[in-house]
Amino acid sequence: MAEKAAHHTTTIISRPSIFEVIAQENLSSTIYPAFKKIVHYIINKNPGQLEWLDKYFDEVFLALNTVCQYQYLKKYGGTFSENFYDLTRVSSITNSKPDNKQLYLGLAIVVCVPYLRNKCDMYIDKLQMKYKLQLKHKVFITLNKIVHTCWEALRLTYYIKYINGSSQSHSPLLTMAGMVLTYKNIESSNNETLAQLSIKESIKNYLLYGLSHSLELGAFFMQFLNWWHSENLQSKFIAYPIPNPPKENDTYISVRNTNKCPICENERKMPTALTVSGFVYCYKCLHKHLVGVNSRCPVTKLPASMQDMIRIYTDN
Image (tube, rainbow, N blue to C red; front, side):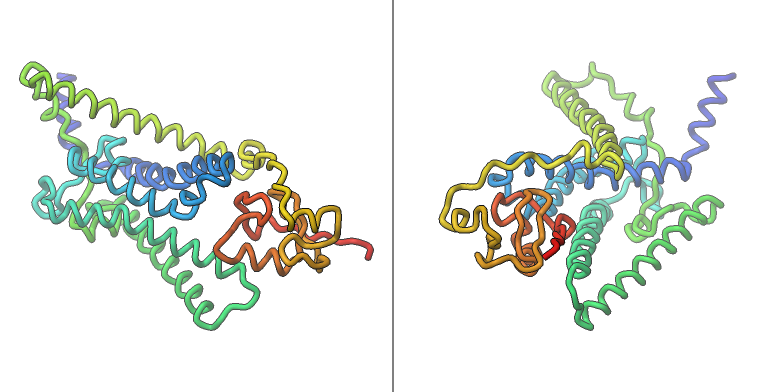
């Protein structure tokens, strides 16, 4: 009787709880910043060799994420984070496996929306570092705040509707793709025994199983890194490495042990130090250099940003 009752429970409750769908969303949003911190740490260890990875990180991550999510959607019917919580996608109309059109639409939404959002956030952060903003930039920042607020309000509305049962989907993006989340049909996947598979197919299944579970283990590791790199522990764990002494070129020799700026080679005005390297520049020279394409220390080539600038005040 107990077994029969348990069996009925698993078949009746096909809609995931709000905690499960939010958990898989949080896992999905954790992968990008955690992976970025790992790459950023590697770049800091090799500042001169991996400049291309720092410049094109978002594009590299987009390509890797597209391949990974496509494999999971094709094989398991859900994204990496959804499969991690034993969830899968079905058509909201037919309640069956999505067709190829829905699969590709869902893939485009999963990988492109976060990419565009990250690019937009980076562009706005860059705009906010400027002294004076043009009218079009101010309008763009204001519109971005309005769109972000409306989007979060829409997500909250979907959550509330999902909790009270008036909506089968918890996400407007899933609704746009015409899909909903449900639990995997574990019984059907277990009916296919290993005895019915050839040796080649068995090896392939074992490799795919090991790969998928290694990715899931890596997701836990990334979540741990994301916690470890929190605001309180970030300065302790990912401190910049001590830079090597700069090469003895003519520019460095001319400004060494002087009050000259390594960029303009004139006497420093409004001396400003760069925390990643300790070198002191003119404020305007350093600001112009970091706002440009090369967001690095002009001498040591270590990655740097406006937040790494510190004004130096003297009695003179």
